[in-house]
Length: 216
Ligand code: GRF
Image (cartoon, rainbow, N blue to C red; front, top):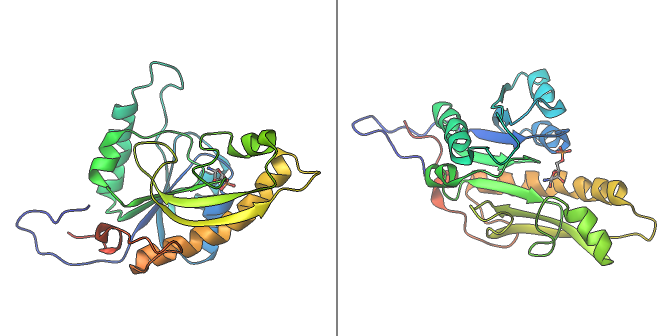
């Protein structure tokens, strides 16, 4: 929840959405094309998505990881990123292919206000290789899941899901691209509902903080 500053006048400003990325950014592109109020894009590394944000005149910041090894200080990194979100008055955070697992500090500050999209029907196939794992298990149907992000990876309450058929000639790339085609629509629809304070596809009530706007 974003709390009002003590003693300050409380006004509700325009909703502000931050998107966290690490890859190509095709889902970010769909959000922008759909007119979602993306005010800030953050990546953990240089990537095409950050250039895409800059192309759209959206503030784009690389909060660079100093390590991808066992010495990575996850909480310190999370605090850096959280401070940026707070500084920019962000009200909802959408992870879209973000490659760093964030620590507790961001969930303390933005509880119930962080969304994620995952390329499988959770709770099946959590983790980094969801599409590869689905193919390896020989499933005939997989899909995508939009959920509230929690400290436990790919485990938060589900807001929307949609199935995608697996074809006999699919490889990881072709299946992932068909899933992403669905994600680009389903994630946009779900974020729009959250920002409007409306029930999502699963009817899950989204915590009030996610649609209250930025309080100053
Ligand atoms: C999506 O499939 C998302 O679910 C996964 O990473 C992919 C991001 O794709 N976590 P893109 O970078 O937006 O094209």
